[in-house]
Length: 230
Image (cartoon, rainbow, N blue to C red; front, side, top):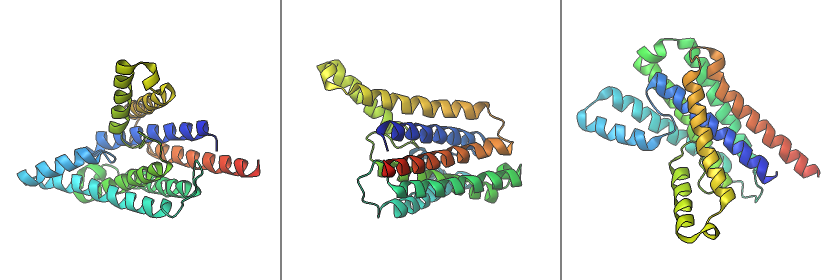
């Protein structure tokens, strides 16, 4: 698979994560991919005995760890040096299944997704599991500064490169890498903005992230086959 195709697919994954993070935050008040924030919320909630916050932030952490563990279990045995290992596509197929299940469950439960604590916690677990799986899959690709589900490291890497360039000139930077990191951040933010403008109560809007993951998986498989037959 050409590096350009891999990088494009990573951008789609990042935009999907931004969209999904925003959808879940707007309706469920939880980020399914931001475990730093959920850890802080859980710690504060434990100190103040806030049962509701403990339930939802704890559910997010539990779901993410479970998804990341499952994703790592899938991709870890693949030690091939290819740009996009086959098992990464398998992990993303699992993420797509989780996202489809999440969308159907949310659409089926309707307003209970917000009002019923147990239903809401179950949806949070499913959402975070999907993001954890994607995180493990993206990490296997080994692209420095890109995790697709969070942009803290991406912004840190971009800022560090810009500081190095300011101190030592263009020779100290990698312009193409910096452009890639900036693109990841912008696409993530763009995905979140699209989610904010989307009618979240419609099934199509909820299935949209799953459709993007399916597209990425199929594109990766097609590119791999073409590369093998070339």
